[in-house]
Image 1 (cartoon, rainbow, N blue to C red):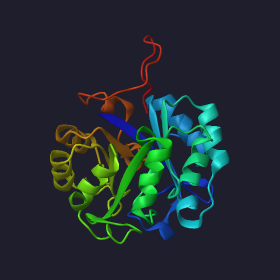
Image 2: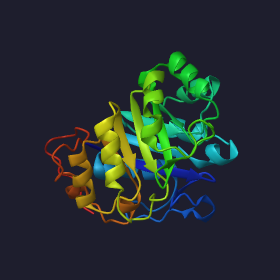
Image 3: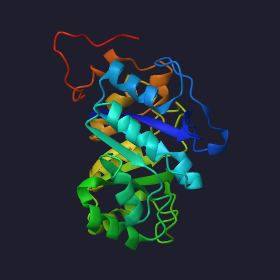
Length: 259
């Protein structure tokens, strides 16, 4: 299981996302870095934790349509993440192609900003399903979506249609839990993993190592985390206690730094 750190960008800086209440998001204060510049935060994730992947949620793009292309390019050029995945409110092929031109690895298509199922099908066909991850955005386990056919459905109810479109990897993102430190909704995640063939990432509500161990047992491929890292609740040594944790290879003589 991989731990994938999250950077939420709003007004050009990293913010602390909490419960999907975006009007209340405040600039990030973190124990792992001295400012809320997206590049600084990304570098801290890599230097301190050696994470291999990075998830960027561009709220400027999702909310206002103001996409931070320069920020992505800077992070791509000045870090060495193997995979950088970005949710920039992409819902058209043209936007997906432009996003990939910045050098990022994966395009996140969020159900929240997707207006038409056919647009997702077209994106998958043009840029390739291996470069697309569908984020099933949830609010209390109901799908948040611009597509009428998916809105307010249980994620399992739309899973067959998603699979038929060719989607291979999904994110189950419970927005009401993001940044809350209230714990992960295990049962809905477990049901989704057990009843679908997708590679599943999840996020929202992770408090500690015990939460991660339970998600590992469920069989998710990766977990998106931000708050517990920035507060220092989860430290580098904690992740090494997971049975299947994957970390970026570095000099074998160098120990993981400690917070």
